[in-house]
Length: 263
Image (cartoon, rainbow, N blue to C red):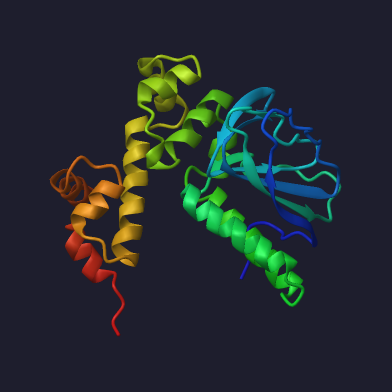
């Protein structure tokens, strides 16, 4: 088996951080021989990405390399919290091989992962090499599960910011117009930029995420088709079934039966 990225040599720290409400974060510049992960679990913060401050919220994964700066601003009315993991690496200043900003599959899944990381980190009976492989492997899967790293790094910072939100949790509830305004664009300009830089539309990205989430629920739960449709942001089960069949050539029921294990 060939790894797409070299795992770190050591793990220096794994802890949950809850920022005090009114205080300004004392951000840190990542030193040489270290990679650091900030997985946001709640609240609102801001981090420097290519010279621009980008808002980060629950479920967003920030993968730092030497020279990057940790979260530098927090909303005093909704201070951020995050999982903080520090890895020791062999190279002094390696090139970036993971997206700086990406999004976990859901805030709930991010929190479960964070809590398990901390439980195993403080348990001295857990094998350290195995723990590093598990944490690092999970981070790689989550950071690369959507738009690929190489493609993402070529995008403008505002496009990456919009992409992170579109790939995020359906419960955020922001309309495309609100997302466009947050980066100073109109909806028409947003569509034009996405077609030029990514080759697709914001609507298509959202539909792909909905389909992925629907497949996960169909394969791993006993939720009804109506319940799956509701959790994935469809207006009703008929709209869900039409979209699902159009993209997979199967009904949700048939797909579920085909992907269920046999006892």
